[in-house]
Length: 257
Image (cartoon, rainbow, N blue to C red):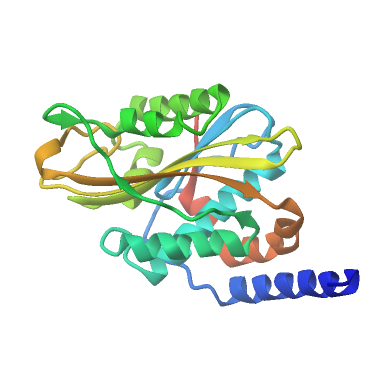
């Protein structure tokens, strides 16, 4: 393949991605909250993004954080529109992954496995950290713990709590993600993500800290490392922002860590 062929192929991929984004349909759950301004300075920070929690190390700049948050949100809302996130989770995750790939993320395939725990009851916050420890750096684990701890400290009616819980689960079914983002030695944005979905027999309240009955809960988990091709994302950034419209202000909220 000549350099000219490669250039033509790259341009075609961008054209295809822009068309894909243009044709996306996004879910619009009813939310009545207006969040404060996002903390996009270059320091450790975290945010609730619909049914995800995303934590950042201090190596990312404001633009990189904004790109991660918007990409994470558009993938969720598009997948929500296509498939029921609680009842058709396998197809939901397939589409979620495809949207991320279209906007510039390099996403290896997801491989879910049943979460096995000891004891008669368990909480998911511990399982999240155990899952991420296999792929994340100490700094990434630290911000993930801080984000989870921040959410735990908030009252039930806090906007961040309501936003996450209303998107992450229904009464007895759920599907949520916890991600820690950093940068590689080459300044590439890297996201270490834990993905979970479950069915249980008891009505779930605050999902990360709920005491699940082990005997009557089936919980699947997966972990993956994703990298963002910023050259690609830069060419679709405005299309993503346009497609989201005011949804970013509706479904993203800061967590203080």
